[in-house]
Image 1 (cartoon, helix red, strand yellow):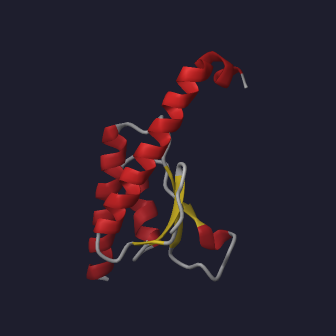
Image 2 (cartoon, helix red, strand yellow):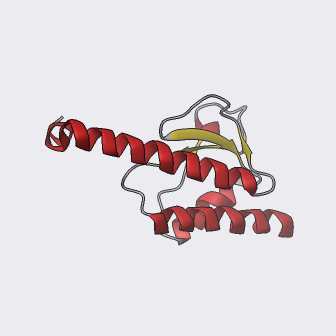
Length: 114
């Protein structure tokens, strides 16, 4: 609550805009990587779900890059194997976003090697 008050009306609007823009950017770039399938068809704010070719490798690659990995949805919905919840907020820098996308590409290569 204090964080929101400190931001003020214009600060909150700026953060909201950043969240939306960054999340849509990541969503679009992930969709361009073969075998990643975006499952959200409706508008998003800062989270979306994606079917991954190898979620275990994606999580491992994120950890190697010191990134908080996406949430493995099958932990809560066992039938949703290889589905990840990706969250992008104002605290994600351009570099961390690019590192995440690189981790996704590397995880895809790991799948092809297996």
